[in-house]
Image (cartoon, rainbow, N blue to C red; front, side):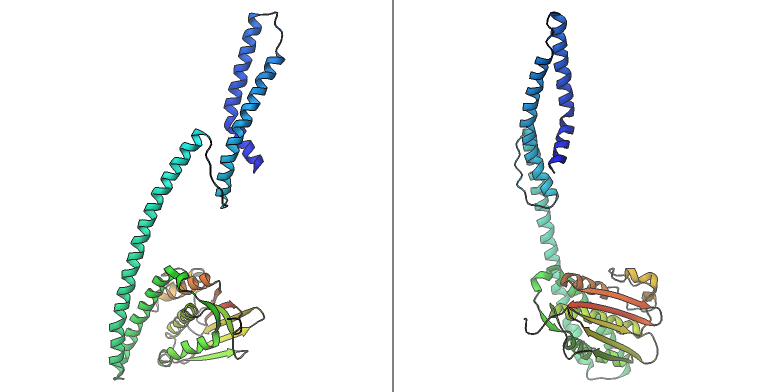
Length: 336
């Protein structure tokens, strides 16, 4: 850094140095031409160089202190910026003014965003009430027409839950509790909640696990949402194929990690769409075949996985099915 600042200082002061040397040369030449008997050149030149060196050392010290702090701040390191020259003081005042303006604008935008999220969250919660009431009313009737209404009502409920999840992720860190969670128990709970969908779409869930329990280090609630979104996608894109289909959940516990592979026998994803499946609202080729595609499920799963430090990958073969793999850090129920 010192070498870089030294070169920058010399470059900034090069015009001054050249002008000073030229001016000194002109003065020495003037006196030499006026008094031809005076042949002394080296002595006044040395004095001029000495004075220039003293000036550059003082100026360079001020330059180094201010610019060193700037370089450290540009690297993301803490540094206290103390302006020394009038130029640095003016720039420092301008910087403080711009920071103050930016802070005010940022705080205003933040307040507006928080207010919008607050009202959106409450509005979505109000929407859940009539949807739940409709579900309760329909439980007393099992006719085919009511069953269709129930499925559409479930789609509305799922969309509301996805929207609420997006809102909650804005304050993800405030709703986080890292502990040991049994993936097998979470998986069984979600499968049980979605058994009606599986039965109606002729999908048969199967769980394979090489251990009785599979504890991982994660947040229980967010982890459940992550897995549920993937299972929802697997059911949705398996429903378009006729006949019975398997939905395999393969849990493997290793020394440091636990992996869950969710393998469906759905329509699959074209290879040219695989790189974009985690983008928001991207439905790709399958979105034209499945009318209720939203392109949100995998996006939410990826966002949650990234925030929790988990790995999620997707492999697929067209018309054969899709495999979504999640990897967690292995945990123990004795640790938490």
